[in-house]
Length: 162
Image (cartoon, rainbow, N blue to C red):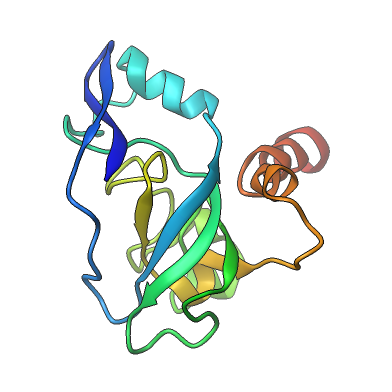
């Protein structure tokens, strides 16, 4: 598959990479249909996020279609059109139970395009699918829905709530 791969500050390229595979029973594989570039991606490219390792596929906001799920995924199935949240949530830890998903201590938080391969690719593995992908109604376009993955929630949190 094609993916946008980070190689270090100022170095990234579209290249062929291996398709993602399920690594946990709660994962989903999603074919990416729409993706955006976040200011955070630009910070990574600038070198401001040193924990992003060279070889990581960038991106953490997308819309797509579920193509495969782990045996424990209950909320979506192959063929479902979904929004991929910029924040993955285990759904079990104290922070997730308090709806503070960005603080997830169960392997979630901001992981896509940061600690694991992200959404700027043809396919992405999404951990904790039951809490990290959300089915979309048919009447919402990909272009509108992708704004709900990070841009609008961040604007609301930073601009309205804070």
